[in-house]
Length: 392
Image 1 (cartoon, rainbow, N blue to C red):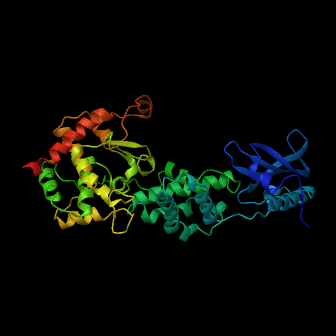
Image 2: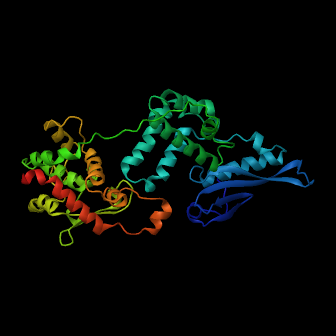
């Protein structure tokens, strides 16, 4: 027989924050954050609290995104029967505890709208898939403690420290969410491992992209300008703007204002998630204006129509030019070195030209300007220097 009450599936999904009764002691609790969970209030027969009154207790039945309305009613009925028989449900209820992987997959789905892009979302769950699911994926979420977490982290802690650090963060999130849904209690084992310094300290060596010396850029650029390949044009533009590969290759025509001599890269394609304006110089415009005749969606079209150039195209070109050890991303460092050593540019102007964050959160909150006019002057100097080898 199907149990009935005041709530419906639609109400469960749409009720505002507060405690909403279904009847017979079952409540849906909606937190201000929007999280929804079930609780049941029962009076345990024959048991009294410290004041001598009947023992009235609330028990969590799990999150509403995991436990359906009918399941919550069934569990609430089970708890009431135990309480009527004088059994405390906290110690006698047999709950269906989800596995670590089930909770992790749900967390991944819930957070999809917050990912910067699909690639980041895939990386989040893939880390757990590769290093956590094979060892603890099928375990009930409430049975995972420090030993189980260490099983995942220890094998890669020193060899792949950055991956292990991210894995620890993601395991912690999954366990925290499970606790908020009533499936766990006590301290998060990831936190305990960190505070007890169970794992050895690892000094991560900073990885730098190999960069060309700024003095060598004019000769390199002169060679580059003799080439007709689309990859050469994209690399020239990347070098002049100091932009990242993805920002340049994803550039579309509606991002460019030729009258204002400005390229506006949207926030979703920027690493820091903030819109970035790039002043365009004569040399930059000379590269992209002839490409308008192709009438492509993308400025730097690849082999497929209306598709961007491959992100490996510029790197492969560098290899064909025998520039050993130089990377595309390294031209950002080259520009930064030139700005400091040759142009004596103010730090904040050089950093903003590379779309880096400058100053503390408070400083950035008050400094609303992106120093466009000053950056325009600096980029004009850089373009003049880079193309000086062509003039020679």
